[in-house]
Length: 126
Image (cartoon, rainbow, N blue to C red; front, side, top):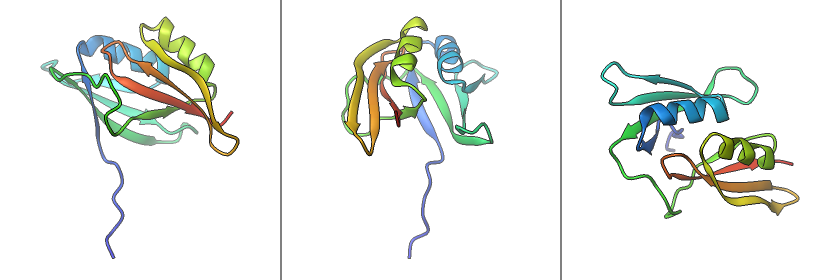
């Protein structure tokens, strides 16, 4: 039997490292540390209950943002899709798809582009 593998690192392309740091800290409450030479930003995503980290990764300058869903699409949990999309827009992002019901069982989603143009989703139960 193969040992289960968790996600250990996520990389998000960025066209402006400082702007990505500001956006994800403000909108999603992540912690972002830009390394000394300014060529990479390391982020930590807190768990919903505030206890520890649920994921970590980095912002990678110089790579093309993911502008269309071509396979894997990152969804970020939130309490209210509509409110989070409004916050995303206020912070310089763009709503691509407003709050949409998946089903009674699976809740709601919305899609947005971050300031670099990366396509992502937000999800909430209600």
